[in-house]
Image 1 (cartoon, rainbow, N blue to C red):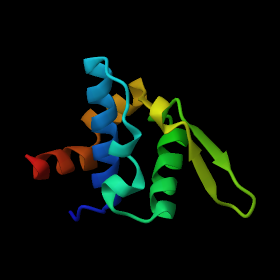
Image 2: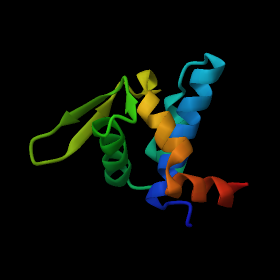
Image 3: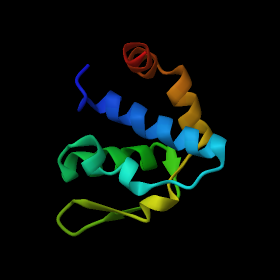
Image 4: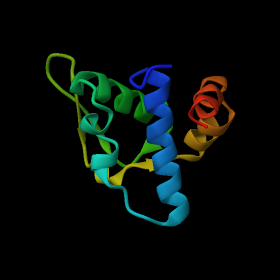
Length: 102
């Protein structure tokens, strides 16, 4: 999979959030923003919005904008949820990404 594939980015975001939680560390938003993945902001916003709406991540705000877009705010408060951990560890796509990264 390419570095900018949806599942690769989702894996990296959730993995980072999970690791920070396990270590009791704060989230550095620069590690999970669009610049970290070198992708367009609209693509990154879509991913973060989906992670939020699916219940895989929480703590940050997914604010709908006039015209149909979204703004992600308070990213430093992002946290993985129990459901997010299950998705990260049990989903077939996440397993495939993990195997390719090893």
